[in-house]
Length: 112
Ligand code: FES
Image (cartoon, rainbow, N blue to C red; front, side):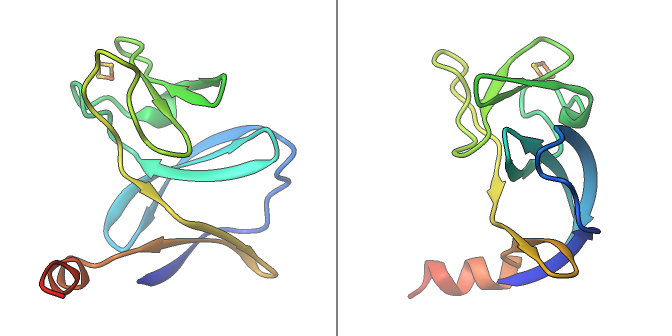
């Protein structure tokens, strides 16, 4: 897994949603209730930018059709039958980092 710095130090107590890039992937970085989450930037339903959405009850709500996704697991609400990818986040002394597994690493893991 490669770690990418995606933001300077952020006050994790102020809610935010922003789109960042890490390892060639578009990622939605979310500060919510004192934690930072990283999920896919694009809604799997019809491609909306999740960074244009908002959070409620531990989920991000898509601005287009209001599907919602759990910030920790990426799972969509019951009946949606979809999910968004989630990524690990580390807050280090010099900023916020997101871990991304490369395509080659995924293939290696599949054949272990
Ligand atoms: S594009 Fe996100 S819910 Fe439809």
